Image (cartoon, rainbow, N blue to C red; front, side, top):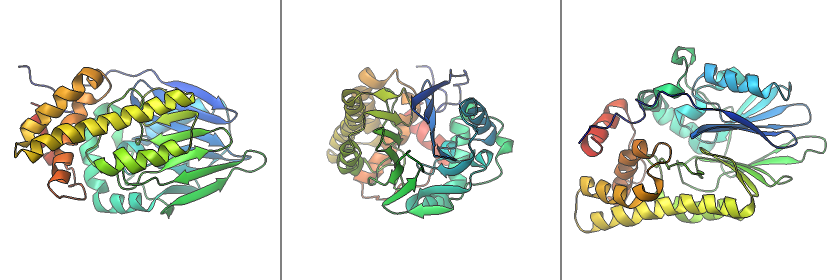
Length: 320
């Protein structure tokens, strides 16, 4: 058997980026399975959603955005704490960086380790990592909901925490006027899930139920193409739920039978690979996903911190 390259370390091919105008003053940048970002125009300012992995990568996104609007960035919203979503923040010059309370806690607790971990796992996303000035710290955090008045006749942007899911500090951004949602990594569209810092049962049930209850008609997930139409949005949420419930079932069976982590990995991989195996980051994610779920089933409530060293240990044990 050929040994698989570590995580996404061998994934060095550039991705085609596509900027889409979803509604008047609402933008999304997708990139064939790389992390998605977005922006919403207020009357005289911008709200940007996600920061990318480095200031250099973020500036390239902002150059594309400036073809449509020259409004200054007032708010930069971070959906969660992972390095590829946060470390490019300095490029935006935002007046206020907004995140959930849990995101600030996680950056404090494990932000430095996550930076080293993700840089080693996904080096292509870290364009000129030396440009990163340090960890990104939110200026404003909240526990449940925060509403931004967009001014004029543009309505409001609602930031909401739907429960523990991809991390314990995820938030979504909801535009009621257009029925558009930026869901972060709580929902993926034709991209595999990363669940190494997840809470699988609440994510698969109450958290996704709350996401679905908004009734979005356009959804920008964390990765993958923009999803348009109520049925397609429901399908994307359903895909996310199916991935989680399949993992819970297969890993749960092995755990209950007194099996091993390696056996659980094999069972989950075999069940998911036929449907999801060709989607972005599937092979990358699976060892970390199964390791986290195994811990949960063993009574470990909060995820063990991923370090570059632990990443390699888990990968070598399960995926090599």
